Image (cartoon, rainbow, N blue to C red):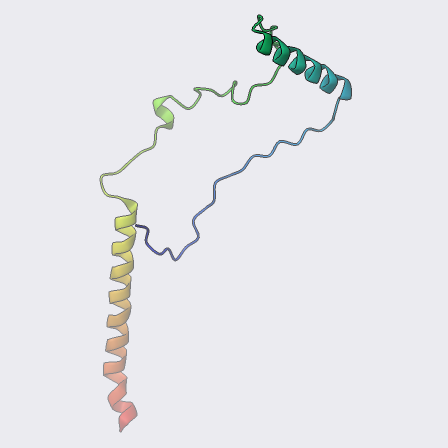
Amino acid sequence: MGMISFFDTPEHKVFTYKPRFYDPDKEKIKQAYAKKRLKAEKQGEALPETGKDEYKPGEYIHGAYDSPKFEQKTSHVSNKGIRSIAWICSLILAFLIVYIIFDKFVPYLTK
């Protein structure tokens, strides 16, 4: 069960790739190759080889963050527990300050 947060939590980052140019000839070749590949799959024939210049998302960084250098450092005490204890202590301190101020100045105001 989540607790109410007084601060906004950051959203995940979204990457949108927008190509700078469009090559219609290359697009036609890709579509023709996709049709040929689909036809070969339906007929059970051997699939034509894919081009080496075809982009596969994540192929360059696959496994780059597996090293121990990028592992998440975890502590024995959760940050959520520490944060809630800090909020409780600050609320108690604030009520204590307000009580002391009213205890000291209310008798002068009622005279």
